[in-house]
Length: 363
Image (cartoon, rainbow, N blue to C red; front, side, top):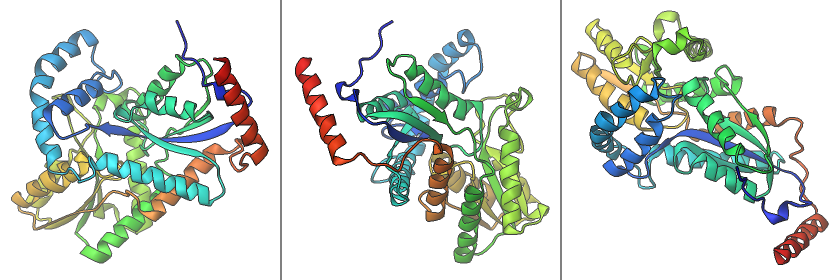
């Protein structure tokens, strides 16, 4: 097995530290062809679909990929922003904001982002960090609640890249922050601001992304962490147990997933006389197809058709300043022990340039 050669200027270069924010991913454009590429990568991940390959691959390539991309592309088209996919746009903006916040706090860091599926991919992002001289990388998945299908899959991809690297950087991974005080406070601030501007519904529904129920029985902590986030947010808002409800969305396939399911629950609430709801998706820190189309459009319509009168979607945290501060603080906690405050002096930078020129000439 051959390993990738290292950039020549790495010799004698002071250590650089990087923070890599990672989100799930998105197609490059709202077209069937782009969705086919994206879904093929996403649904081929054994962390996402825990079905034996010999059984799953014929289903994926014979049934799902010939039909689902066009349907998904039409949904993406309804939420696409002028700058691109909402998830891509918000993740890029979050990365820039976190970089500015950490720099203002005196840290000298490379702050970049990647997507687990689609572009920019993790291998390319790690190659770019290596080319910039990063020798230490903190990987910060943008998933507050740990799930094997999301958080662990990010680690899989980073470590897969590392197996092909000659000089592997020091790596740290943040697994979860479902109960992080800054995260909870940012969620509460988002809800209060929404209530102040839009009024308050009879119920606050917290819709988390679903996972197969068997993940819970096999030891995945995701379900428990979703409820922990909900409990802490309810306490921060001073809500009673009958005023806040946890549901799970985005069920795929016929197997049992975590319950209660979001849309059927909203329909049942409307049928039972609940006239107004506020719906928030705390597990998504950036607005995306699952929040803007599945919840703000489809769930909204289902609630109204079932007899509800007012459905109010609460935006994701996106670039809310308190959330950016919370992300920066979270990174700081996990960067401890790595010197991120000392910038190379002019003499060191000059030496690095001379070494790079000399090594380049030798090559």
